[in-house]
Image (tube, rainbow, N blue to C red; front, side):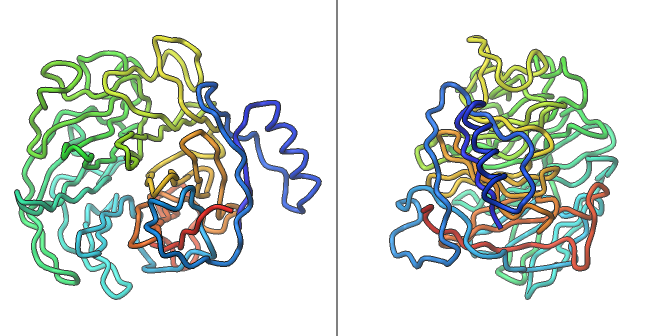
Length: 388
C-alpha cells in the first residue's frame, strides 16, 4: 500500500533507495523528493496497517498517515476535477469536460447545474470549486475556462443535503489568461475570509514575472472580487508570482499557506506561501539558492508527482499526484512519503479533508491521460491515524 520516502537530501536518499531495494520485492523507486536546505526533516516511521481509534481532536495528533484501503463513495464520475465539502457534510464535484456540478447523493452524482460558457479544451474546462457559507449568505464558487479567458463565478447555494440548488452565476474574477494547458484552476477561502485563486502561466513563462499579467500567480480577492487593501502589490489581486502552474492551496492551523506546483521537465514543488514573494518560474525550476527567490520546501521528479489538489490535516499536508498516480503525505519540515501507488488508484486529482479523521480522494483516469478501469472515476474516503 505504501512506500516510504523520507526526504533528507541527495546522499541519504541514495542510501535509502538501496535499503528499499534490498528489503522489499517492490521495484526500486524513481529518484526521490528533495528537501529544501532551509527545512529540517526528521525520519518518518512505517505506520501500523490497522486503524487506531482516537479520542483527541485530529489537530492534536501530530503527523497523520492513511490507514487501510480507500473506501469507494461514488463511482462512474466523468473526468471529475474538484471536490467541495459543504457545512452540512454534503459533497459537490465538478466535471471538467461537461461543465456539470453534481451533488453526491446515495453514491450517485446528481447534476445540480451546468455552468454556461465552459470551453473544455485540453486541460481547460470546469475546474476548481469552493464554498462560502457565512453570515453574508451561502455561495458556491467555480473556476472555469471560457472562450477568451479563465474566470471565477459564484452561485447562490440553497437547500439541504441531498437537495441542494444553485442559482445563476455572477462574475467574481475575469481576464485570467487561458491556454490548452497551464490553466491553474484551484480556488479556496483562506482563514482571513479572502478568496485565493491559482492561475497558470498559460504556457507563456514570462507571464509569471510581470504584474501586467494575472498568469503564473496566486491571486487574492474579496468574496465579491475586489482587491483587498492589504495585498502586497497595491491595486493588484496578485498575492505571489513566479509560478508555472500552481495547483492545490491549503492552510495549516497556524495560518501558514501551502501550495503545490507543476514543474516543467525536472521538478514539481511544494511551497510555503508568503505574500509578495517570487517563486522563480521561469528563471528557475525547483531549488535555486537565490535569495531573491523562494525555494520550495520539497521538490519531486515530475514522474513522481504532477501535483494537483492538497489538504492540510493537523500537522500533515496531503497531496494528490496525477502523473505519479499516488497520494503523498508531507510534513511541514519536508519529510515525504507516498501511498496507494503501483496503479492502485491511478491518477489522483483532488484531496479534501473529510469529517473527523478522514480524507476524501478523487481519481482522474477518464480525463484523456489516464487508463480508465471499470467504475472510474471514483470518489474515495480514507481513514487517518497518527504516524507511527
